[in-house]
Length: 98
Image 1: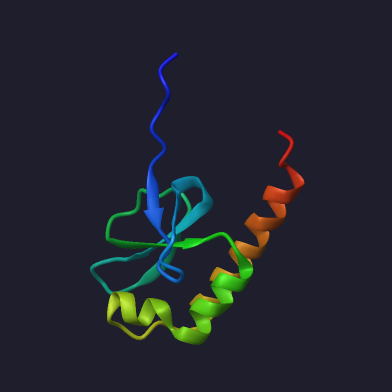
Image 2: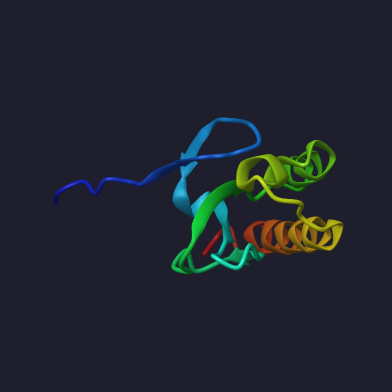
């Protein structure tokens, strides 16, 4: 069987390359609204962040998405991001055998 290519994306906080499934996409649309994109298909400018709570907290302290999208991003979004990443990390640990 032919080996499939695994798509890689760069984590915006650490600068490391990871498989796309280990990252979550954050999108800024034309109305300058920033949101999470778990499906990876929303239209707009996207940036990826690793599914690690420490990295999400680092993104909040460094205001990473403010710099990436060149707009002011609310603290509420960063809190939502940290909660989402924490939830996904817990799911990953719970279902790692499957």
